[in-house]
Image 1 (cartoon, rainbow, N blue to C red):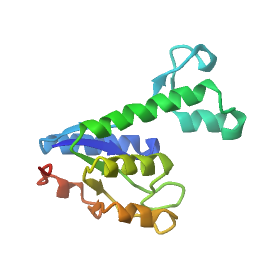
Image 2 (image 1 turned 135 degrees about the vertical axis):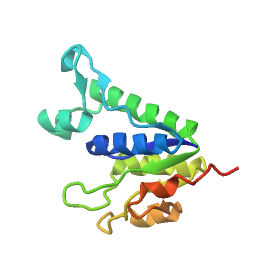
Image 3 (image 1 turned 180 degrees about the vertical axis):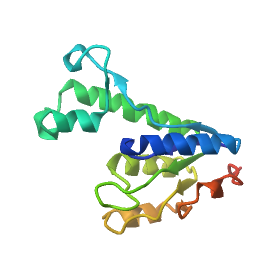
Length: 160
């Protein structure tokens, strides 16, 4: 099965580990693009993680709506949407972030929505925190809850 992993970039190392495990199970797996080449303004030849870059440079309100960083962010979002279109299913890597167990952020939420729209199965690794105000929307998209066991996906095959 072709699987796209979605989740906060903070979980990148975990996503690499899950990718490797799913690949061992015989699946073809894609993960988010960690960083993009950035324009001269951000430092030529460097890579950028959007959240960290924004936090280190005055926070989100320090960047106007027409700032170049939003073009980069748009490219990253579109790149991952294309991976969702390509796959048979999405795998949501949701771990603890900022004290919230089973964290699913805004970008991952919209990726779940895209997968739902394309009628792709949505596998969620860990229980979803009740601290997330949009938990009901996620449940409404009928995810398959893995309760912390990514091995449960090993026997899964894409629906016909």
